Amino acid sequence: MRRIGVFTSGGDAPGMNAAIRAVVRKGIYEGCEVWGIRRGYAGLIEGDLVPLELGSVADTIHRGGTILLTARSQEFLAEEGRKEAFASLHRAGIEGLIGLGGEGTYKGLLAFHRETGFPVIGVPATIDNDIGGTDYSIGFDTAVNNVIDAINKVRDTATSHERTFVVEVMGRNTGYIALTAGLAGGAESILVPEFPVDLDAVCQRLLRGIRRGKRHSIIVVAEGVGHAPSIAQEIKQRTGLETKAIILGHIQRGGTPTVFDRVLASVMGARAVELLLAGEKKAAVGLVGGEIMHCDLEEALATVKKIDEAVYKLAEILAI
Ligand code: F6P
Image 1 (cartoon, rainbow, N blue to C red):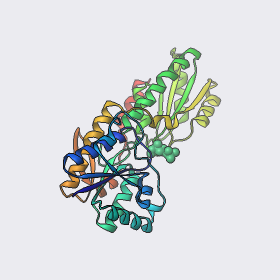
Image 2: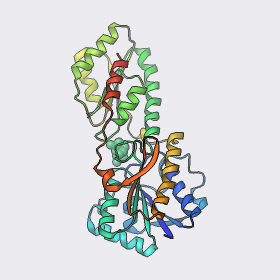
Image 3: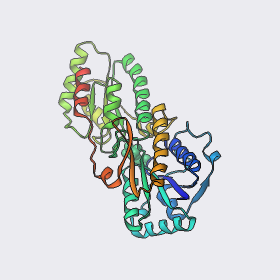
Image 4: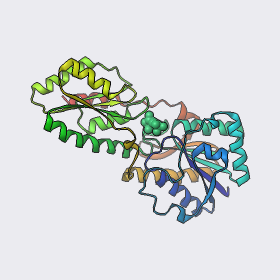
């Protein structure tokens, strides 16, 4: 294999640049040319391809976002779009593709491989951490640290005013960000889509805490459960407590990647190149039990990841 293509797709995730850098530099080290595809699948269809040199990825390891830009392409969902994408790759002489992203990216890679036989490797990069075949995806650690930073700040003002705050975090329909940040941030309650939400119990817990002398309360809610303003309103009505809502939104996806994400991205990016060169046709890179592994893309997509119920229960016990 002489020429490899790399792209980022779906929501950006901090650490994507570190992974692109690893693909480029490892690829060149192995004697390949590496081309960047801009704007994900949309750029693949349009043929928006750029050759990447060693210097193209200089000064990027610490940057959030993605230097290749990203998009959510509707056209690639159709076979016609994928045919155009194949033609673009063929014209550019690209022989293998590395895609960084989440579930949508993996699904696109698999459909593309099935129709064209083109070798594809998926690298998990989503703050949601909801993609199978890996314990951690690139960007999750930075995102939860962003949430913690916000919770720490909210906690200061919450204590001063003796208020309750409902903090809404991202995660699509999963609670990885909420549970991890809620546990690490000492939240009084964590609401996730994976487990039933009992607002009465949340209110009782709040009132118990106040009777015990708590000066503030933080409730972390995953976006898959509902929106912070309406939950805050409901809590206020039921308890009479002054309750404010914060939606952290896209701030969670930004900023310089943590050490964990930079290392994960570097190792995963390099492994993706090795897999292509070893002749893998449709693989997904992952960190499983502390080791960098890979599995079939289909297996990664078929695996339904679940947040750890024991950790969820522990968070409840510790926040009492
Ligand atoms: O998948 C990453 C993510 O940030 C989700 O947590 C969130 O639901 C979604 O993307 C937001 O998408 P957009 O950036 O298109 O608004």
